[in-house]
Amino acid sequence: MSNILASRYESLPWPSRPVPYETDPGLPLADAIIARVSRTSALWQQFAFIGDLITVAADGSLTYREEVPVDHVQESSLLEGAAEHFVVTLEYGEGHDEIDPFDIEAGRNREGDAGHDQRYLHPVIRHWRGTDLVATHRMDENLENDWARERSHRQPLAAFLSAQLAGRPAAAQP
Image 1 (cartoon, rainbow, N blue to C red):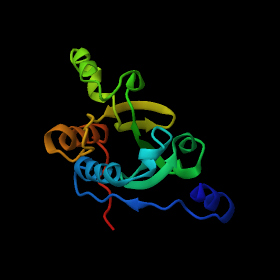
Image 2: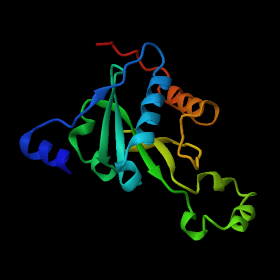
Image 3: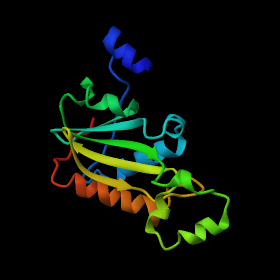
């Protein structure tokens, strides 16, 4: 809320940082996302409501803004100059509130259901071009909340981001 008020009444920009990369932005951006979802309290406590915003400028440069209300993204000036953007949230999967997490039998009953890997809190990355949702990547849940695992989390996220950003120019480094 403080960033919205500072922007609206004090004309202060939303705090941001660049995500530097040399050729392929997928891995540096994946590392930035994993670092955030591993340490943020806002995304945990305000799941699906607060997200991180990554804007992609026409020149390919990436800007990372933390803790933006998801509904505020499209109506704010944060997208000015952005060719596209990503929103990172933590979310529960469908049906998460229907099963007792301590009931061993419930887990066994859902083993045949592929959706059980996204029942609990996990990162969701949505790629937007303007108001059009282009793609969504749901990282696998992890009961230890460790999304830095190379094969199951980091590589699939980096591959998703690289594919989404393929053909973009390499950003000029500061």
